Image 1 (cartoon, rainbow, N blue to C red):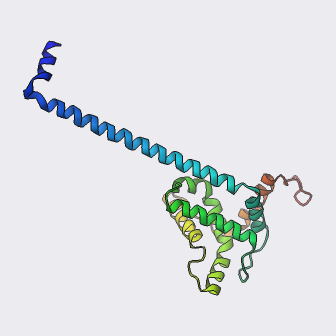
Image 2: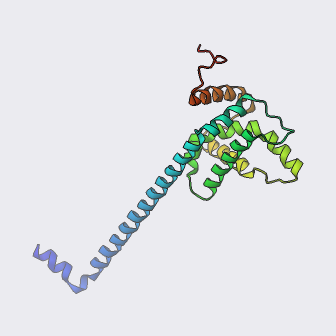
Length: 191
């Protein structure tokens, strides 16, 4: 033990202390960056939980049900329920673009809905852009859809095709009615 202390305390072996200090600084930077990453992920999860609460709130559930049940008329102004739904998607896209929520988290929870509602509402968005000569009308929703499609391809899956829209609508109507507590209405008998 005395030999080790003499070796370390020897002025000719200052490099050992520099090595120890450099190692501790590197470890410190690693731990701080890890803590920041964990805090960022926790913040993303908190924001995602907020979006889930809004997504499953009664006004948005009613909007989802209305869009899923009705034929979207592309050559008309946005109905209130359509606007509520598209605005939610715009907000979600904005949260991704400023880094409030993690793209992967959003993709895992919302990609199905993003794809389905984009396919349902895209003709109306396109018509409205042409009518108002405003090419960026609901651009955030379109960017969100494109981002979702890109992440889907990275995961080896593909965005929803129009041929699946009928199934999407049926599933969404069933889910939303359940969440609203109206899944046992006379026009929706138990099978």
